[in-house]
Image (tube, rainbow over all chains, first blue to last red; front, side):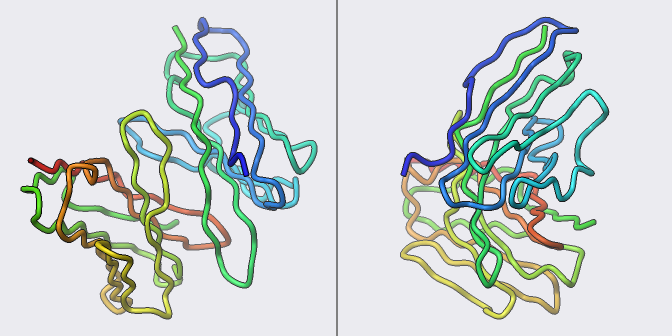
Length: 115
Length: 111
């Protein structure tokens, strides 16, 4: 299994530009999570999906952020327009529901720099 | 929502000594407590987890204990090695699958 795949691994953009981050969860997993990691705020859950349906987006910082999951093998996190304070590492994670809560497996992350 | 506090923020130990990291959580309904290790520039990786129906769990040099009454759990690393140097995060699940993470502990193992 290739694990959770994210692209791009690094993104440098200018303020005001649109940024799209991509994630492919582990095959068969039915939960997908987007996290943001910064030195100041640590690891924050932005949004998560179950069976492609957004369940909780209360962590999305503002309307500039949006996430979609059009099918079980692909999700995107979009920032439009981007701002310097959006600079962070964005992780995608996936999990498989069992009888109890199960392990979340993280992707390698996308390091976003907004100039 | 769930609030997870983690201490200490940094920990330096001599190789071969033990390291202990402690976390407290606020929501008594939380029932899943994973620990992640993150090396510099890498992804967080699960190293051990514990569920609320278990008081202690061990995996080789790593152990986790849970005290539900006091709402705290701890990570114990014995016989530390240089490769144990990393940032360690505790987390608690307080509803559905939402994980709330502690702020992290930077562990440095001195050779």
